[in-house]
Length: 162
Image 1 (cartoon, rainbow, N blue to C red):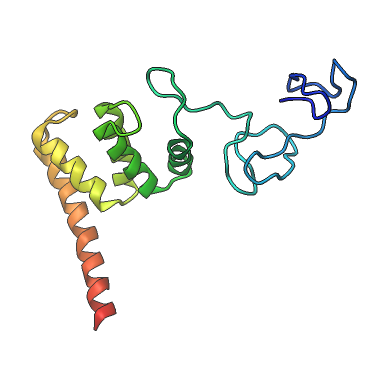
Image 2 (cartoon, rainbow, N blue to C red):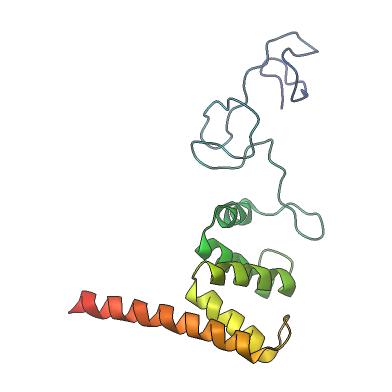
């Protein structure tokens, strides 16, 4: 955090700037400008990562693009779609370093949250022994879940068009 008066770098515990003596104001969200009552990783108004949040990095230690950070935030908050999108990015190595193990972890989380595409992908992984140990029983379980989800979706679409 920087002093609003002289831009000196401040420790998070400073109440006054050690350089100019100005009272330290509560930090502002860099996305929406709301005053943060305490140091926080995410803004309570817009959900954006604050300056105090550690920047997400890839395996090589390079900072990730903000869009990937937002996907991680959404996934951490329980969004199955964000989990699935992260899984695909890690699978293909798009914008992030390819990591099939991490991709499989995100596919599993999304599948457990009910994402049918992730369920199909996880079933395929178990069926073919990709990243996970080949397991026909697990493959059948995830295929059944995905098929149930697909059938419910198709039934809803049919009733909407009738």
